Length: 349
Ligand code: NAP
Ligand code: ZN
Image 1 (cartoon, protein in one colour):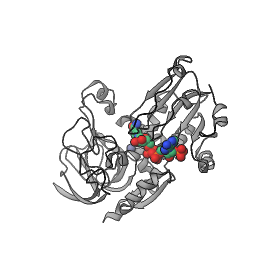
Image 2 (cartoon, rainbow, N blue to C red):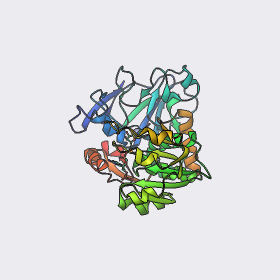
Image 3 (cartoon, rainbow, N blue to C red):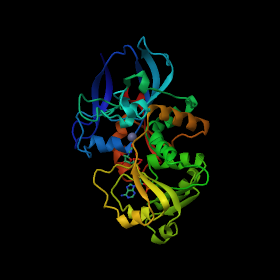
Image 4 (cartoon, rainbow, N blue to C red):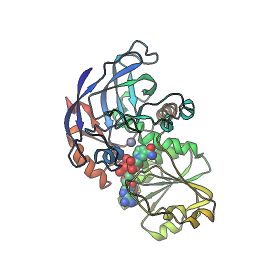
């Protein structure tokens, strides 16, 4: 066992503050990573503040991790000391249920082990990437194929990238499809870039008039201010698929009405309070579907990283020291970040 510096929330109402955690010494198929950068996901905030009512304290969030391998167990096959590596939202799963066999560990029937606050069905707490190092078994470690100079901007791909790539792939987004992305935050800006690279016609829906120009630069063909009812009405029955990334309860009907016959809206945003129920008539009259999606499996996460490297896709980031985290959370709540905070972990030294 060894000690590592970290930042933790001690309760739902306390600010994050310095904390020391213990990691296991790497054995067998374990990989020890010196964390260089960690993205700040809205799920970190939901967890630190116990908004999903399942947080175990002390809580060390962070699941958009990139770093360098500093030690490996003797059974590690595909990584070596000195390699760059990534860790996303999961560090373990049962490995033998149907979803695990299919490479969809996020849907493990026993519940995957979250990088922090895992296992999801209870058990000894795990601590995430707001720390100087982490030890993870090889099968949950990703290869980073981007240029080294982009490393900080690659970190958010480990959650925001895969959480948007996976449903965009699953629901067949590509050339000839008109796709709506709702919310231009950490997830939303990755979704715009990825859907554009997949060849779809992308319509961004945002509540922030200040993001219209950015939306177009990021890859949106059209931008709609969602509070403007006239602009919204122009998209009625137009879209094949909508990916909704909004982190707060809102009126889903406003978007369901924009789907074509047989269109699907998939929710990835996970607000702590429920959305007002959708009006069933918005579903049944056009055989529309309302769906959800959780991150993505490890194999698909590697596929996403390779896809993004090939298409020169990284996150647009604001880099910050660890000690800035509480202000970063407040700014994230105000949608005041373009478009992902990333912690420079050297600031913890
Ligand atoms: P974020 O950076 O805060 O972005 C959320 C965006 O939603 C905001 O930038 C804003 O975009 C829009 N928004 C916020 N409040 C709104 C409101 N009241 N009404 C309408 N729009 C609003 O958050 P994130 O990191 O992208 O995460 C988004 C959500 O996804 C969170 O709930 C997070 O926990 C969840 N998540 C889910 C998964 C999964 O596997 N399903 C994985 C990761 C994260 P505009 O300014 O453009 O309107
Ligand atoms: Zn996340």
